[in-house]
Image (tube, rainbow, N blue to C red; front, side):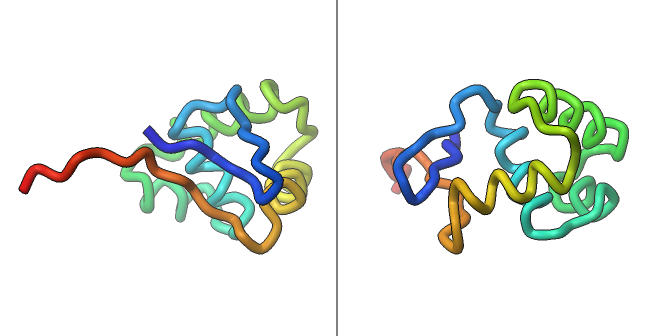
Length: 88
C-alpha cells in the first residue's frame, strides 16, 4: 500500500492507492493516455479515477488537482511505500 504524503506530513487519506498514483501523474503533467499506459489500465478507468479524485477533494478539474498536489507536496512530490520484509 502506498500513501500520498506531503512535505508537511499531511496524508491525503481519502484517496485510494491508485488514485494517489494517478494524482501524482497528473501533477507531473502526464496525459490520460500516458497515465493509462504507465498504470496499465484503460483510459476509461483513468477517467473514472479522476472523477472520483475530483469529487473526494472537491477539485474543479485537472489543473486544480495538479496545483493542490504540488502545493501539498511541493518539489518533494513522491509516494511513500510501506516497508515490507524482504522475501530473501
